[in-house]
Image (cartoon, rainbow, N blue to C red; front, side, top):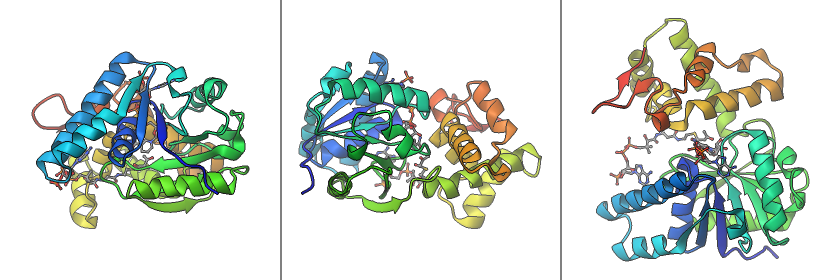
Length: 293
Ligand SMILES: CC(=O)CC(=O)SCCNC(=O)CCNC(=O)[C@H](O)C(C)(C)COP(=O)(O)OP(=O)(O)OC[C@H]1O[C@@H](n2cnc3c(N)ncnc32)[C@H](O)[C@@H]1OP(=O)(O)O
Ligand SMILES: NC(=O)C1=CN([C@@H]2O[C@H](COP(=O)(O)OP(=O)(O)OC[C@H]3O[C@@H](n4cnc5c(N)ncnc54)[C@H](OP(=O)(O)O)[C@@H]3O)[C@@H](O)[C@H]2O)C=CC1
């Protein structure tokens, strides 16, 4: 029988972490949101409040449900605050060494029967599971951005993930009102295996001067009916995350077709990570985004 999940811990209060806390609380789960930074925790809570307020104004959520959801989320600054969670989802930066350290420290305080999951965009679930004391209760639960709006969640089993963990995770995702796509544990899974090479190619198209930022985004929005242009989407995802995913694909599949575009590397080195730092392929500091190339 699948384990019963009532209390969910979320590690990392960035764009994915606050989105996951938002949808879990709205679905009736008790949530503990954790981050190493107190400021990030505060801004994560404020973002959830703002997004719920927007849903109330659109009549997608009632005032009462918003208040109940906010009351279900507790901000916890220490990993100890997650000790009695039934499921903990890690959504810290896309860096394997950071995630491995989190899992090591988390497992020391988390109740043994709890499930541990990662929202990683690309990193091997089997390898991350090996950094825990419970590889059989470890799984990839990969949400899409923006979490409150996107319908899909990928579920990725590591080599040791047991059936109870998979079933409990599937049931949890269903309770959030999302659809599951099951992916094998290959670099970047399904969505990012397809999406990120497209984004990387758009950056090469810019790098080689085939088109400027506006032309490339307009081409894919109007010519292929994508809701966002690939460069706008890269800024939305975060250029650091895009680069990490391309590096995992390049190293994991050892194929030069996944070589990260040098221009993407340059933007990340400049600290121009997209919307989250106010500058990427667009500059977001003014009233309207301005292309940076
Ligand atoms: C990198 C990875 O590992 C995996 C990934 O996630 S890859 C990224 C996947 N995501 C995508 O590809 C997103 C592509 N973009 C889109 O689908 C759309 O642009 C979008 C859904 C994000 C926004 O759509 P839009 O029509 O341009 O925006 P906008 O009009 O501002 O908002 C649409 C609605 O969403 C709501 N909304 C926007 N952001 C929201 C949020 N964070 N929370 C709640 N509601 C939100 C708005 O209130 C609005 O509601 P109504 O339709 O009721 O008016
Ligand atoms: N962006 C996207 O579109 C998607 C991203 N993902 C994945 O989700 C994860 C998070 O991405 P995203 O939310 O965009 O990134 P963000 O940069 O928005 O958020 C990451 C958060 O984790 C915090 N953090 C860093 N180290 C730790 C730690 N040791 N303990 C607790 N918190 C920590 C960061 O704090 P600080 O800034 O202070 O370092 C930050 O608040 C990544 O693995 C990413 O690949 C999955 C799906 C979509």
